[in-house]
Image (cartoon, rainbow, N blue to C red; front, side, top):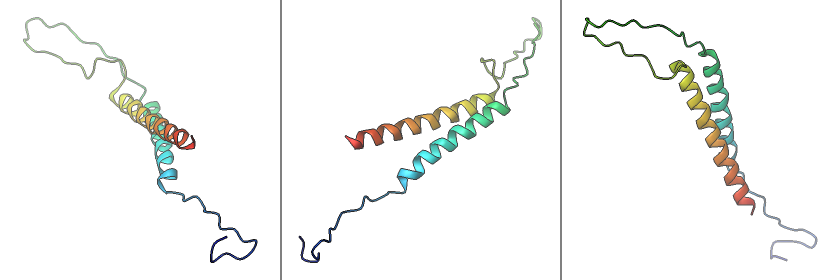
Length: 98
């Protein structure tokens, strides 16, 4: 017993909840949802054609090599970053329990 405890009274330490323990997974989940919404809303790539013009001495570069739009690529990148944050948080949580 401690000096300040009476008989039958136990002082059990309460676990300290850090705000980061709640904020980090919520931000990761928010990034996944926003990324999926952006990728889904920009899924129309607008496939186009190009012409061969041998005498014009001009090049016609495309927007990208992939067949998806730039908005879809950004949405998928944000989704992947959100999933990485969630995976890091889950690994950190599992590592603390051991």
